[in-house]
Length: 169
Image (cartoon, rainbow, N blue to C red; front, side, top):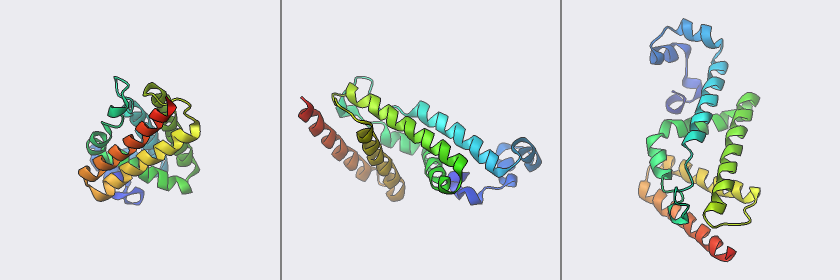
């Protein structure tokens, strides 16, 4: 619902209708919309990390990010929720902690994946920069809704990584 309407467009009544229960039960269970948002953010973060398969099974750089566009198209609401959560976290310290934890986990996943694909000397700063590029490509994919454009950009990012991997050897 947040992905469709933003945080301000979510009401107890709408959540109850979507969940097939009364809005009073939603209110009783969560106590506040903020508590509901935090529960949703925690669940979304756990799901995102489980689904973050950036490293190809064979470890080949050529297949790095192959599933990025598929993931964006398949789980669009989840990805958009993460962006909404990140923006709202500027004004909510609890969401900020949850967003930071999610981003730190993405940085770790990328930092672990790159050496498996032939990139040595990966620093935490480089993992953050690479994630920023991937995160930006995802956001652009949602803004432009142009799979060909996103694929072209992913290929350009792979080319940068190929060049870095060759420089490492």
